[in-house]
Length: 376
Ligand SMILES: Cc1cc2nc3c(=O)[nH]c(=O)nc-3n(C[C@H](O)[C@H](O)[C@H](O)COP(=O)(O)OP(=O)(O)OC[C@H]3O[C@@H](n4cnc5c(N)ncnc54)[C@H](O)[C@@H]3O)c2cc1C
Image (cartoon, rainbow, N blue to C red):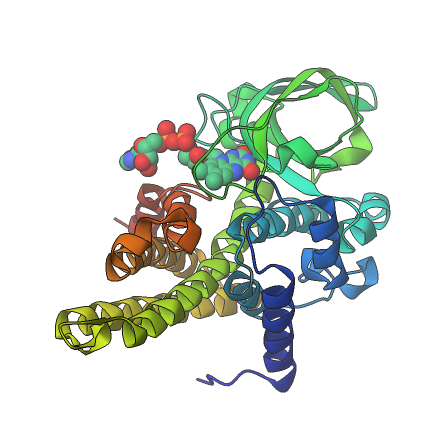
């Protein structure tokens, strides 16, 4: 077992940390901007795991995760980090792995360089955790499919240039009756809703997306008809392993700020950190961070090695997301009243952590995967 990073991995981590600290030191009032997305493109972040021949950096899952971790640590705006990672893992990687060559050559360079923004649309009103209970239909019509239905939560939706959409092509086939498509923004019949108001990841624009007789060429289909569930499952492996590295970065930043604060703030004649109860809370934060970190690195390593990684990925996703929420609560508690002061930037880390146990499959769904892997 080797715990060393290569020189290139170390350099990438340090460079992205420094650049994102400088570029994204504050949170926007509302949504991140195209100019900020382009800055990410200039750092090659939207295409980290995309092969170089399509304009990406060609990194494996572990290296990609390490760089996403640096981004999550350096960037104060977790909404931007989330948007970027959702774009990469749930939109770009399905194209890399399942689109035909012509579509890859047409879309991937601009998805990697910051010109195009991607989104993923699967969740529906009645298909959340029960994700393959889709009612959006795709009906074959000559050299195209006609899509009808509605998606209820699409991150990046309001600004996305293209969407990975999952629809039912054959309801009687269940899991094998779902197909994935690339739907481009200017496609007639694609209707993009207004952005939601939310308390977490506030700079990530999210909305409903509807399809009304939306005609999608067969060339925009991912894999074969009926293989959409497989495409989506694979994209969730990328997302559950690599995206969550951003929360390792956030927890690192949170711990650094908490330690600094408890060294400076004095009560009862000594620094807060010299009170054992406070010090133990910080030690517990460190323990959760490092345990989650090891699980995440192992999950990304297994995934990159092409091993059966379902168990490792579910363990990692659970550990990171639950630790992120606990860390958010602890950081607020340690900062006292400043912890809930919006101007201070501590409470936002809890708000941004809260949905991490919901998206990419809730904690209960991860426990189900673990139980299945244990053959229960
Ligand atoms: C920040 C954020 C970003 C998102 N981005 C996207 C996106 O870009 N694209 C997209 O398609 N979707 C997106 N989603 C939607 C997300 O995938 C769903 O919210 C998630 O799958 C859960 O579905 P649900 O909200 O309908 O909850 P439900 O499935 O209704 O679950 C509600 C609660 O019931 C529990 N539950 C459900 N079934 C079971 C069971 N069998 N056993 C035990 N407990 C159960 C769940 O764990 C949860 O606690 C996003 C969600 C969030 C919060």
